[in-house]
Image (cartoon, rainbow, N blue to C red; front, top):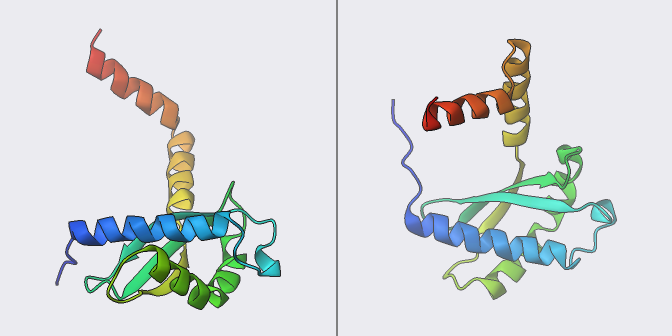
Length: 136
């Protein structure tokens, strides 16, 4: 069984630059897709392949909502976004952009629901940890 290696500092740094570039283009309204009109999109994370040629972009509609509905228009806009990223981020190759739904917020909600069902809420756990830190 092989484990995947943690991303390198370069992958993390370039991923953050790509995230900022894509978020900037979306924020300025440069995407002219009617399916994205009036839908604020949050780019939560960008993971780059080790050779920096493929970027997985994790997105979620701002404030929640149906993430699956924004993936097709973003995928259609990928060539335009790739071009804009190549202008904004200095790389040898512009990475191929693949959009994916960010499920981490859903996962966090499920964990919170489980904690609530056993009588422990996230705030109670944080308060208990704080009490342990500071002592009686």
